[in-house]
Image (cartoon, rainbow, N blue to C red; front, side, top):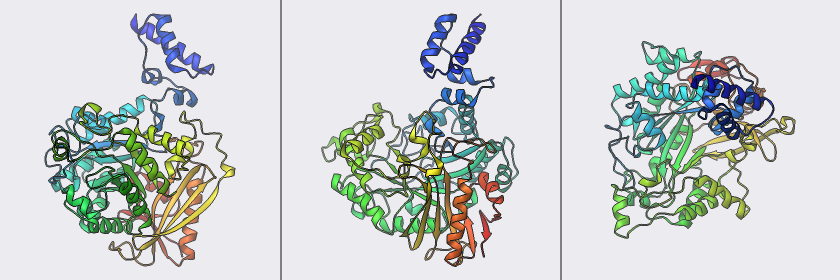
Length: 518
């Protein structure tokens, strides 16, 4: 009887949504009351039904997960041997890799999967598919500790398992697994690896390229040698500068993790840090994750706090400092995240509120700050319900921004209006830090191509994605490189995105795709 009642409830909900109602939770409660059953989940309503796209959009959980055009899958490494370094703020419980407590959502998923990369990927794919999210274009991020310092056999098997699972078949080698993924149902269109600046030299970059990585997240924290000494970081500013330049001249996208509120810093120094990062040509990352410093029991920083030698920012102070940072973050940068996912119960002192980004956005509005970073202007965020058809593509135009960075010249070519950005390409003319055999002084690099809007299945025609914007941007980048005398373009492409570039005349060259433009 329960199954029959649930079936009737689902049909009632779908019928009401087709009438144009969008108050899903109210409709679900009405259905439960009407048919005397439990409240059904959104995923149950979607499963086994051929529903119009607009109904699926309404029923999707957390549309923000795919609103930027990709589906994100975090895969966490095992706790054992995860990191040998001893930064004073970093927790290690044994339940998760170092820097995680084991209670964060991603860590809990990893623990349930016994840190098996395959089980983590399967679980996440099922969750997305059950709630109507396309999974054919996935950005995979390898999280926790210092992955690149782990045993070689573990690293290779870990990465291969990710591809094998996405491919739904086991390949003989990593290279074969990557090749299969080019046409797989669930494609890895981007692979991100977190590392330290002192574990990001030529050897590590070659290794990451072999894995199919496209973006590197560097734990920069606060580029100041005195602060690095105080937090026992184990490296200096020189390593940050070197890693950044090598990554860019190898075509990687570069993301910095920064930590406001570290020992030795204050509000003024933290804001000045962001100004320096984007005014000093040696830094200038493409993306930021901003993690206010937290005190967690079991760390050296916690002991300093207990002795009265240190006090982190609370939520109000952190929101104030971070909002000021937004004054100095340029339009070519995307702030990917503000705040860690650590449960408030495990935070002894620091930001305990889980809505820090909302508090920052409120401060930005109150202060009249015009946030120019990408996430604030993406077309998909015009309306978080996913309703973006009101964005007028014809009102958008190509804009070009050039800036010197890490010894080369960056060209940020975007498709945007005064208020919204629909897509961009990062074109780099490299210089002093070239070391890959595929790249020479006649080679221009495309480090990123991104078109925004909710993710659309490959081959479909979405509202913003698949409207030809990517092709237009690629053409602009090729023209720009050709005019400056470059003979070849290299693109760092996730293996699952290579097919797109093949259609534009590119061919595989080592870990990249390339095209002669003369």
